[in-house]
Length: 126
Image (cartoon, rainbow, N blue to C red; front, top):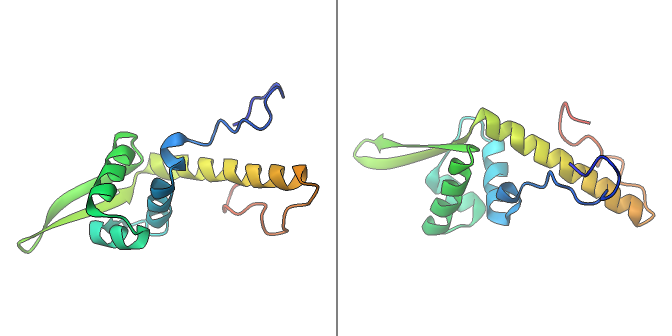
C-alpha cells in the first residue's frame, strides 16, 4: 500500500516484486483461473515459456510460498502439477487490489474518470 501519511501517495508499496514480474504475473493469473492446479506442460503453453524459464519462475514463486509444486508419475511418465497456495491466492488478490488503485489514480491524474467497470474488478474486494 502507499504511505498513509500522504508523503508518497504514488509509491504503491503493495506492488509485490515477486508477483510483478511479467512471467510470474502470467503464471499466477493462470493458476488463479485453475484452482485445482495445472500441469507443467499446460502452464508452459499458456504462458509461452521455455522449460527452463518456467522452472525458474516456479521456483521463485514456490520459495515465496505462493505456489506448491507436486511431482509424481502418471503411468511411467513424470508429471508435475502446480497450484496456488491459500496464502498465494490471498497475496495475489491483495496485489490486484493495489493494481486497481493504481489504474484509478492514473486515470484521475490524467484528468479522466476510470471506466465504469474498472472499479471492483476483484469479487469481494473494493
